[in-house]
Amino acid sequence: MPKTVVITGASSGIGEALAYEAARLGYNVCIAARNSEKLALVKDNCIRQNVKCIAVQADVSIEKDCENIIRQALEAFGGIDILVNNAGIGMRAVFNDCDLNVIRQVMDVNFWGMVYCTKFALPHLLKNKGTVVGISSIAGIKGLPGRTGYSASKFAMHGFLESLRLENRKTGLHVLLACPGYTASNIRNAALNKSGKSQAESPYDENKLMQPEEVARAIFRAIDKKKNSIFLTFEGKATLLLSKFFPKLLDRLVYNKVAKEKDSPFK
Image (cartoon, rainbow, N blue to C red):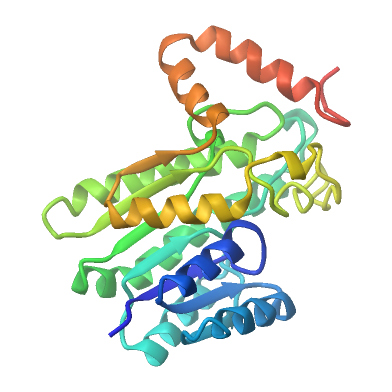
């Protein structure tokens, strides 16, 4: 009997690539996102790979929506083996200029959305000795200027999932933290500015970034090998290393990189 994977934020980017990789591997797939039209297209593409797939329109910042995602997955497939907390939103603004609602919105989606989904899925994951995945970022190991809310949400994700891993040291639950580094996706285009509006344009050339399909394959390999964490891209691995041994150098490098971005908040 195929295993079941639940993926949030699956209408584009890494989430969409994860859905296709799960389908390729033969999983039952439950995908969730706010955009129902894009989600329906992803569902159809998964079904074309001869697997079962359901799509649930949901906003993970709403507790009842998260409960509904898990309920529909259970009704369709009878159990859950993997939960991938991928839904996320970015921000780009200096904290001094930033509306507090921007920070709150980022935390509601990136942190609380993960907490809600994990809470409702956990009894079923424990039953199947399953896996919880958090799609994080290098912003979860190094605070990034102009991304205070985003970095805070990813640091919070790390603390939550590391604690959850230790709590379940003897239950068989597998917890994976995945830090892809800069990956081509819609997250920068949809990132909130200081007023809470979408900035609409990425400050990077998305074609030159790591592609989401590579990330999806790496994540499922890490699930299979039951790794605690993975850090992808040279930049992500270098950030991890420099944060431990050369923190002041890393501060300078990170600041200079952000300052060179298109329309950077730093001059």
